[in-house]
Image 1: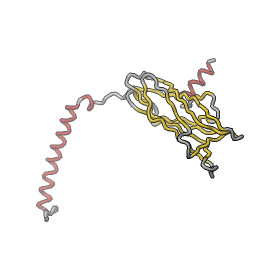
Image 2: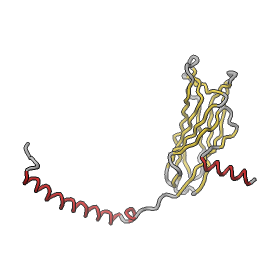
Image 3: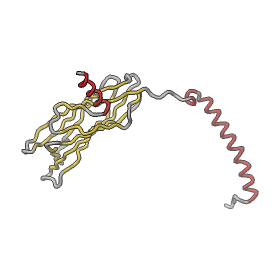
Image 4: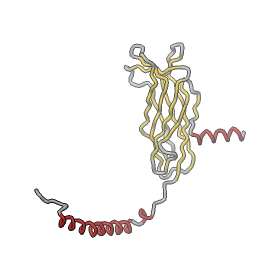
Amino acid sequence: MRLWVSLTVMLAFAGVACAQDSGCLTVKKISASHHALQQGGDIELNVKLSAEHCSLPIDVKAPRTAALSVQDQEGFQTYLPVVEINDFENPPVGSTWMAHAVTARFTLHAFREASVGQHTIPATLTYTAQDANGNVASQTLALNIPVKVIEPPKPGFWDEHPEARQRLVTTGEVLLVIVAMPVFIIGNILGFYRWDC
């Protein structure tokens, strides 16, 4: 039992999604735009899937052949779910292309109230698949995508003391004028600058 729990935890930390009744597609890789999601921040999650023993018929006349639905969890909001179908066979059969890979992508926002630690974001991918015998069927793949939430970085000294930063900037501007003015005057005397119009 301990070995099973350890393996499950290791898979979650490795970024592998758990899929139930995979059907045609299997998860190859899960990647994220950052190593962790900060409270109050966004992260883009990508799930790459490949067709093992079937293909995905894409009819150019059909409106949509795959859809990703991500369930919002407490403390999180998802938006911009996109499904890209790729790895097409050449040539197409009529107006139908056969594909062998899918990339599902969405952006996840963690509110400041989201708890720190590991979370699982459930998603459902619905697609049309064709087996080796030519049978076409609609299939659904349930995904559980692991996400690690961390606290935002602590504010630095200059963020906590904006008046000190403003004084330093003003002092730097004054020093720049004090140094630049003599250089400009000497350059004018020596003829480095011409004011011909």
